[in-house]
Length: 309
Image (cartoon, rainbow, N blue to C red; front, side, top):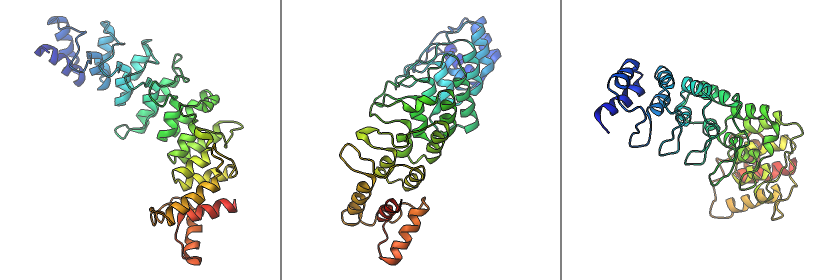
């Protein structure tokens, strides 16, 4: 890339409006050139949240829908970087939305996934802007292996804000299945996102807490499979059916007993001691069993918990 072209990209990303103007108007630097990753000037400004530069680029008719080598549009780039002001500017320009990047994700699917580099207030503001956009498709299905909705991604990542806002738009979205027949509540149970489960329970009238997913597993069975005992407690308190069968004829109690056998009579012995410390009742039962039976096993405590309930 020519030196002046490199300068243009640098000034777009640093917000030097006067230099951007000079290079475009006086030096005739190509506004539509791409860097080695396929990014345009608009990508550079958008991902750096340089809204004044972006305003200039919009004014001089830069391509707002260009995609880079990763399939990111400027809107994707702004969302990924948490560039709230630039997201707002782009959405006001009637750009193309519901576009899939090379990972098969739309803008909303990208926005709802929590990342450590983003401040929650900025991320939530971006999600809100997307949800308020008339053309955003809440039922879009990802083109990755999961084949799932933005609500699935939000549930799996523990993004309670996104889950609530999406369900407020359309509560029936909780019924969407991914490629593995799992609903958002199954993904929340598999990742111990208890607040997401509570949000779904609150926002969905007549929620079937025993809905079947992959291999006819219920959310309770999903939580047991992954050893998330606080989630097990929550689902039982929400009246999950401990006697529901999966495809193989197993109930939650079958799964708990099998986990106990694998844990304390197999190769995983003693790994269960630390499990369940985030649960209240199961932890209490484990401590009681440790005293009365000299068996300090969280999986056995789950068995007793399910029998009691």
